[in-house]
Length: 242
Image (cartoon, rainbow, N blue to C red; front, top):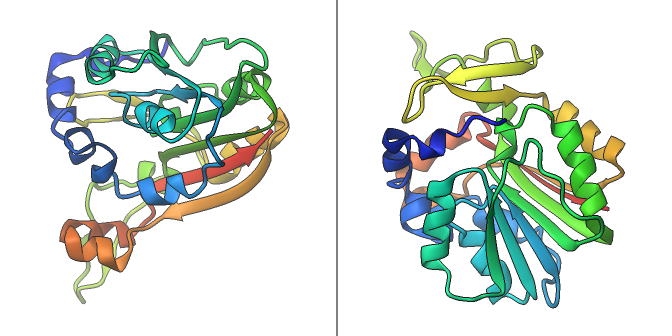
């Protein structure tokens, strides 16, 4: 079973204050880049894996998806998503994505935001999602960039000449990593970029777009703290097709 830190009261309290949770998609700087990877949503049956508060689940229905199923391990997340959602076409389910089995050919679009780096067996997950999609359907997701995960320091370091560096620790060694983020000992799984992409290929997906997200100058002018994201990629965005 995947670690469920989101039902830890201390973690959930801190997480709920993040801009992307307070302001929804407007607080997620990578959202425009992710949205650009989406196909036309009209009439699609969509699944949102690791749906959190349901921001994307609601957006998908508002933008044409016929039905949306949001899935998350956290009771706290699903409870908040249900509170924020009034449309019966958007349903939520508590389930562990690590072991989840979706019905075959049940969906026409699959999405996930910043969830799969908590999953130990991405190969199994990719195969399961592939079976759940109809031919030609898209699978779009974001994960924490493996370079960001392998960083040995939470912020850049300046050398004697003022040059900024971001130390990376054993990028080639994949597997479990633990970090302190709103709670101690949060478990994540480090995989190289190639490992993630090759898992998709083995599962039968065609990779269409890969984006190592960086904020635009306009975003940095609006939120100066985003300039730090130019020092190393924080997120990996992937669009693939069955």
